[in-house]
Image (cartoon, rainbow, N blue to C red; front, side):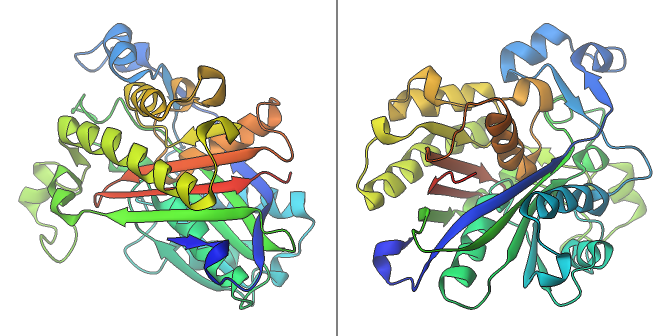
Length: 335
């Protein structure tokens, strides 16, 4: 647990936000034209009606670059002033180099360190915690955190249990120091025994690429949905309770709860168990699907643009994903 009461030297805040999503919209009805499914089947089980799909010639770094530029423009910060760029993703351009390195080069972050964080769909919360630690410890002044995904290229489009869930997109936040300390606390966790329930089996050193691995779609995402559902509904609640307790506030003090956008049933279950009213919960997965590490920043952007999120609001973020990982963050919105 990281919290301001535990010795951090100074505060950190989210000072700017930028988002980019592809123009192409893929609806459930379109998917039903090539897969044995229907709009009703997908919507009732997931809450998803459509998702965005990147063009064939674009990779994760392309979406991340666009989000990064918008974030820096909003902050009026020169890319050369960035100290560190962190990309959180489960769909990097390459196994190496890091997608963050590519983004740095594209945007002109000539003096920034760069690395990727791979923590499943919880990656954005992990990245935000890492940026907060660097800024609060007086190590860096300007840290850019991106959640970026082109998941459409790592899916088996013959598997209706996974391909209907995911979409593409990217979001970026700039983390800078503040006298007030608007990022209050984090809870990060992991249960590696759940690794088989959500993974890409082939392509790494455990199972290098072969003709058979490609033929059998083992370079695509595999998921045991029932196990992930049970994990998520339990850990999201426990993690959120930890950060609320660490900050000494209750559910009624939270203006907006923004969970990772994986499945409407998970969101509703967690919100109900935590005691949130419907007006306190933000969801947009009906239009974007599960964009993994990009889902929370995409939500923040829309919530801010539509007036659901206002300056001074107390915000609770929660993620969960492959690992199996989880993470929560309590912060005050200052945009």
